[in-house]
Amino acid sequence: MEIGVDRLLCEANAVCVGLAPEVFDLDDEEELVIQPGPVAPDQVERVSDAVKGCPKNALFIAG
Image 1 (cartoon, rainbow, N blue to C red):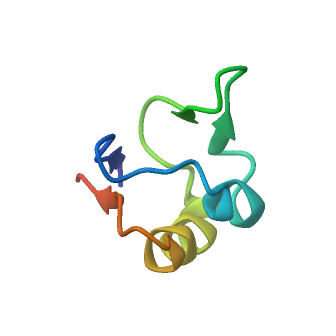
Image 2 (tube, rainbow, N blue to C red):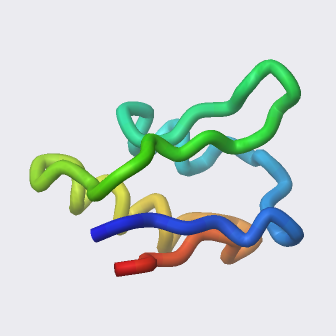
């Protein structure tokens, strides 16, 4: 599983950061940063919750 973000939709609300801080973060400019590569098996449920919980529907599962 890999995660993508539609940067035009993302408002950096940080809901995903709260749900899966090991995968998502905000940089110094308040832009979303996603850890590269596949999501670790122990993070799949949290990341799925973050995708579902994104208030702007900016996150998606890429693979």
